[in-house]
Image 1 (tube, one colour):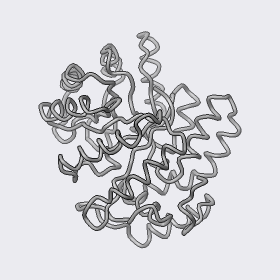
Image 2 (cartoon, one colour):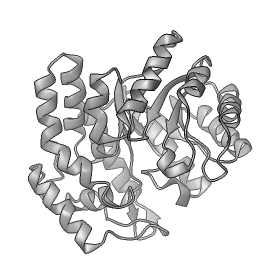
Image 3 (cartoon, one colour):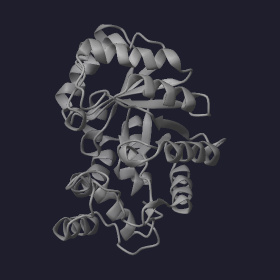
Image 4 (cartoon, one colour):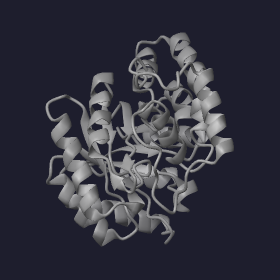
Length: 302
């Protein structure tokens, strides 16, 4: 598993999903050459989506990107194992290439509980599984030992590492190498995409690639070709946005930024709230620093 995977926003018009805007976002990702997209993840506001809405978002992505070479991994994780199996099995049977499964939130299972949960889901589906480690959101994270143990499962092939800790990513990759596993690690934070690529990660699950997918693909391509200085230059250009797109809870800042380029409304669903004016001003400043012209033609060249 490698490349740029965009954790898609779910655009709203008011409180309803704007499927016209969603289709345009999918077309833009395809044109930018991303490896894959992930609907219904955290960035897609999955906790506020109904089951019917999630299914329509997933089937729309599958139908729109069919034959394009862009893969679709659906965010089907949850903190109820039986429900997660049911939804994951549905997605597996309806054309997705894989699943993104977050660690169960709130109930804070032990490492043994985590391992049993993910094995149960992987046993129930026919597609690939990407683990998702984001302890800052869920309250529980993997140990490198648990990740390595889960890597023995033939369908668990990758992990989105979003702890924000480069050293932890290194520990995971070291353990996987020591145990001779082929599981790949993808950065789950845009700001450490380049640092993790430099030490062995193979890609990124990106929020920023909603806004500038071509630039994120360019970082990946430059590193794959050994052009570190080129990748560093792109990273440095866009770092202010890597930072400030998380100035408030994701996806509030990225949806605001996307709205400034006319891709969607900035609307989010409660309990998320609109970006404060102070934060909006900081995102606008970061966009200007990065050369993202507000009000442009959708940032087509980004």
